[in-house]
Length: 124
Image (cartoon, rainbow, N blue to C red):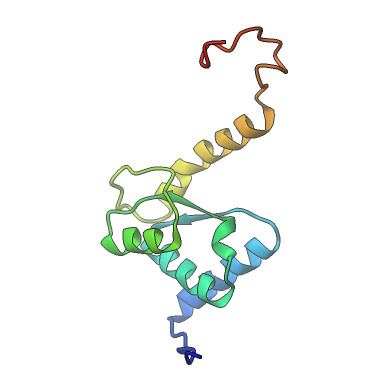
């Protein structure tokens, strides 16, 4: 059996990892923004496996480490705009897109519900 390696991280990353774990445990979706948040999510996933399932990558930072972290976590970012602005800018831009996606999934009628006789996409 492999010996677990100790987890080391800065205080800021530990705090963010705790926030991510707590929010996910409370049933909240967590919007990850940038390389620091992605690094904190790596730590959170190590401490609480499966926590990434409650996370959404808001955008792909131009920081190479962010792309590596997102790839490792299996997350595809909502936006890829070449941002490197900081201050949660990518998350702010992703919020309306994520909200719209949730509304489409929860509120949009199917062809049957909308009484559409033929499905023009399926050719029926």
